[in-house]
Image (cartoon, rainbow, N blue to C red; front, side):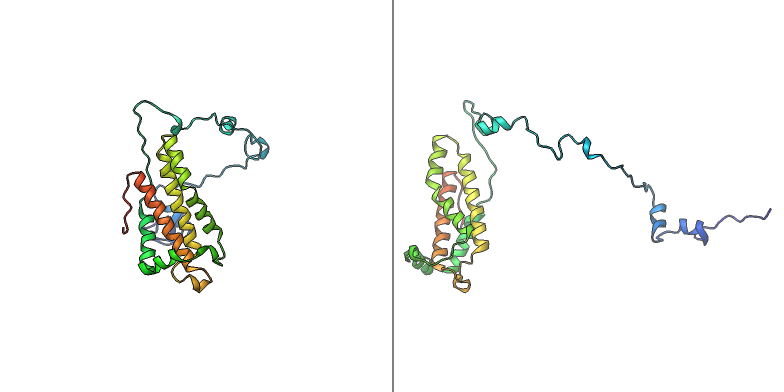
Length: 211
């Protein structure tokens, strides 16, 4: 029987390759401390699915449709206070920054312009913003009648989001460069700023001009 010499660390051959540090490929994975083999799972027969791919009725669907479902904001208790985490008043500061860029005289001229005769091609996001602004008086009355100040928080947040969509789609300062009406867009910015400021004031939040 031929004498076998024990492999030396770092030697050649299969043993050396398996023990070498930093070797690439499968050897590195096989030699890594604590390495576990990947687990595979057999495919599942779709015919055994109970919900996926099937129409079904959730247990709370009828209550939600009929208005019988109760949410946290629907419960009242004596002396109960409301609190809700709202977005930063930064949107007001953002609009104020846009108006500062236009300049006070330009803003006054835009507010005095006859925007009703504008040939502006209204973007859907601009229409959505105007719709939100027109809803402000009703939102205030609704929040007061329901004694639900959190509804104003939601309104201010959604109005700020609507403005973000408008500003994304419509250039304000320099609107003529893309065929827009700068007077109308500046006036819309100012109207949004005033509504957000009033909404924040009703909530006891300061509307800063800078952040």
